[in-house]
Image 1 (cartoon, rainbow, N blue to C red):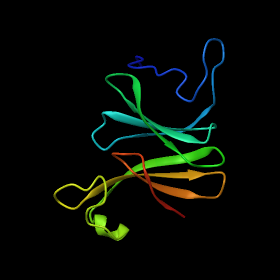
Image 2: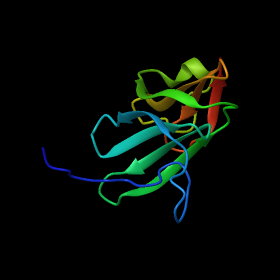
Image 3: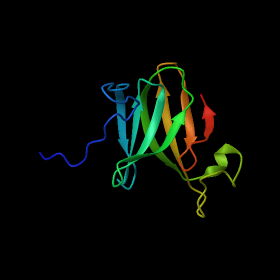
Length: 118
């Protein structure tokens, strides 16, 4: 195969430091973005065309071991139809992360604001 895109130091590091390990990845529903979870306790979103970080989801106390985009058909499950990220159809794009700290977090996919911790 052919290497199409390489994102370096996605979870920190500079110079000779390689940064934290990447533990999981997930493509966005339209394939234009990539989520990465890492040993630095963050999940980050990268634009594949620009090869740069777009958002950081910060709040876990240990490494992120899974991450995913989810389109919720009804934003009202968060108790507010005017929730951030709500589209005109009422759907909501969220990012869900799981961590070795024992928590699952649900984040607004547009703003990176936390919506729920389970």
